[in-house]
Image (cartoon, rainbow, N blue to C red; front, side):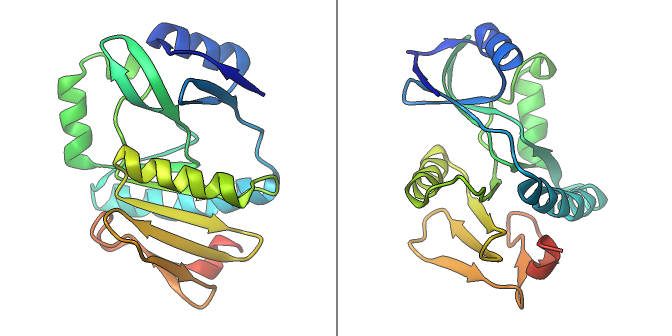
Length: 191
């Protein structure tokens, strides 16, 4: 279901999210999110587990799952939000955010992540996925991992590049300069 709104206060955003369930706010449209199916959940869990362990062990930042982030925020007004399956924010950026936003724990994340992962669901359409990737790049996300459990591939998009990297089960997914040292066999995502 899509509902058109001009924006909302952070309080209204939180209340609607709690009362009506997850949604994204894109170009004034409130787009409700469908519950993920188990193939999606299992793939997300596999990636989250390995990524979280690496990030925590090396103090690289924060990893969150199914967490909304606000992309257009003025004072107390939300004009846009996204809900990636996973997101990562580098330690220095997250520390700066906590300093600049003293009440950060009492509101949604008002910070564009460095990396997002989107897990393809059975009901996703190619055009919607391509649009989502485009928007993430416009928002300022540096790296997008598009994980497709049906094709058993990962496509990596990087800000400033027109090239995508297609990884298959024989390859390893790595964090590059955004999450140094992280590596995970693509096949392990789909185990």
